[in-house]
Amino acid sequence: MAKRLFELLRELPAYELHGTPNLEIENLIHDSRQAATSSLFVAIAGFRQDGRQFVSEALSRGAVAIVSERRLPNLEQVTQIIVPNAREALAYLSWAFAEHPERRLQLCGVTGTNGKTTITHLLRAMLESAGKKTGLVGTLTYEFDDEVVPATRTTPEATDLAALFRSMSKRGATHCVMEVTSHSLALHRVKGLSFRVATFSNLSRDHLDLHGTLEEYANAKALLFENLEPEATAVINIDDRFGVELCKRTKARVLRCSLRREAEVHATRVVSSSDGIEMDLNLPKQTWHLRSRLIGGFNASNVLLAAGCAYALGLSESEVQQGLEKVRNIPGRMELIRAGQPFGAIVDYAHTPDALMNVLDTLRALNFSRILVLFGAGGDRDRGKRREMGRIASERADEVFLTSDNPRSEDPEAIIDEIEAGLLPGIPHYRNADRRAAIEWLLKSARDSDVVLIAGKGAETTQEIRGKKYPFDDREVAKEILGKMGFQA
Image (cartoon, rainbow, N blue to C red; front, side, top):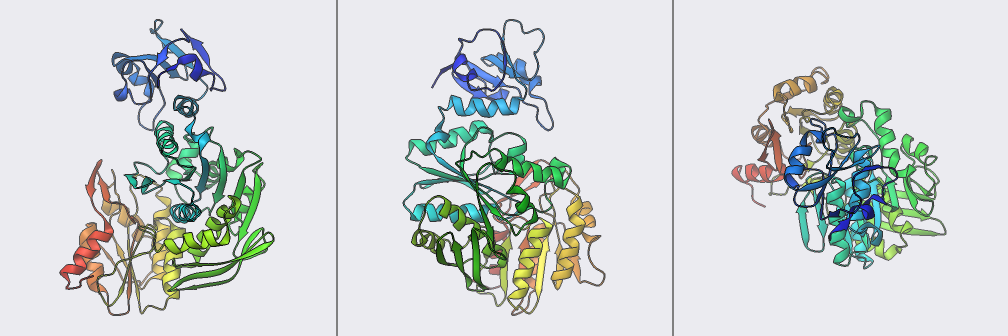
């Protein structure tokens, strides 16, 4: 799959070439450790290190040309390509080097603070029910056919994305549904991709460790819609205030979606119970009756948006309904743990104030005797949400169990201190930084007809502590402890 350098450079919006354009390029990399003979090395600035520090290593391993944002001294014999933005250049070069597999796929992008994973799983099931071979790129896994690859990050770097698209298209995929994070948008990982459909779920506080302010976080999300082509469709939740603004920030056709008001796609007769969700979905010139096994008002919104995307892609009511029937649960999202215990046990990814509030409100509406919630907060991430999550938990749960999430480089006890500061006075609460011990304490505290919520990590299978990832799956830990308590599935 070797390319001539000048073929790749044609894809860049702007560049300055110092050296020969006729080099043969056999490998495109941004990690110097992956360099080999005839590599093109893109030196991007990371959060901790600048890629330009590793140019010498890349050259020693066989790189023949460098892409950078400024010309590097003492390398007169090396071909250098100077670009305004190295991350953006990496994206354009990735699609070109892989021979544009993304153009052979209908790309469906999903962004928002909460709901991305659920919407992508629902939409993929709908497309496959319509006979469309569909890949998935998301928080948990990258999937196509029977191949399931654990995700390294929700939206991979452009080089990895291009490889995924190439593999999918070679094996007959026609569509790819993908979560598009604010990180990937701000860091240009999806720059140059042409999305057929893009949807926005909601906006609430998250990732301010990267973006700094909620406004900048919102602006990062908006990039997905601002870059849509006029022939694309933007499926936007206007029940969220920022969604109303997004409708004005895109050139694409807009399908406004709502559970509360008239819109191009709006739901009426929404019934949410412990058995699932039913709704009538009013579309231009037709009405669909939909049923889902997922529970909770927030999932009603997710179903609405997934169905809106399916409609934009030309699917029928029966194809959408067949897709919904296939999805009994989403891994780590309101996932029931059944071991014969006389109380409810749920694992959910809720790790933001808004997500935690939605899950607790859903459980309160189901009339359990008591709600016991366990959660922590990720280290090296937005500290401002910790106190707020403590307040929300103490307002909506009967007992609160504080523990460690992924503390990363932070002291778990210090993180718990910050959450604890937000708890309302008088709420029964307990703390234990050992997550396994805390889950055991939680489960042993439950009585008949209670429900326990283990929040924050969902379907994650590791816990990150001091730079190392240890095996840890809330679902498996809960089942193991329930087994020791004498319950069997």
